[in-house]
Image (cartoon, rainbow, N blue to C red):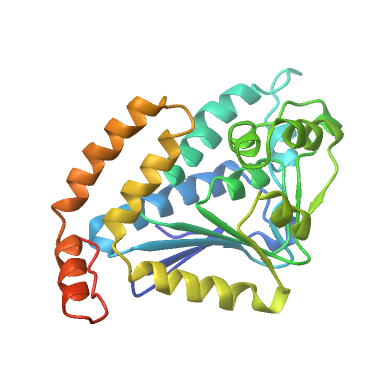
Length: 265
C-alpha cells in the first residue's frame, strides 16, 4: 500500500508510524485512519519481524484530532453527518487494533495532542512527550462529547476528578503536568524526544516480546477483573509464558551468568 497521510518505516525489529499531515497538525481524515489501520496490521504480521512499534507525528504537532473540514464536507441534503458512525467504524477499530498489538507500543508526542489525537496518544503503552507538547480535549468547545477512547483511558490514568475537569474545562495540560499526573510515562526536552524513544524502542525490541504482550494483556484486564478472576488469568497466562523459547533462554542466561538473547518466541 502506498501511504499518503502517514510514513511507515521498519528498522530491524522496530517499526515506526509517523502521522504525516504537518500542515494540518496531522489531524485525522478517513484516509489517514485507513492507512494507520493498515500499518498496524502490517506491523502485527509475523512476517514483518516487528517487536516494538513507535508512533509519532511530523512537524510541530502530534495530532490535532478530527479534520472538521472533512466532516462538514460530508454533510448531505443539509443534514448533519452521523458522527457516531465515524466513531464506530473508524476511531474505535483503530484504538482497539493498537491496544491489542502483541508488542510494546511507544508514543512520541512531539507537539499538541488534541481531541481524538489525545485519545489516540493515551491508548499507547508508553507515552513520552516533548516538553513543548500539550494534551487537550476540546470537544466541549464545539458541542461534542469526548471520544477516541479518552473517556476510558484518562480516568484510569489520572483519576475521575482530573479527567472530568480536563474534559469539561477543555483546557490544555502541559507535558510536564501530564507527567506529574501520571497521564504519561515521561516528559523530556524537545531535542531528546526521538533519541530517547529510539533507545527505549531498541531495548524493548530485544526483550521477550511474548512475555511483554502477556503482561500487557493482564494489566489491561485488571481494570475490570475482580481479584479472583485476575489471579486465575495470571496463572493461565504464566502457563503460556512458561512454554516459550524466551523463558528457556532467560533461565539459561541467568544460570550461565550472561545476558539473555531473546528472540520474541
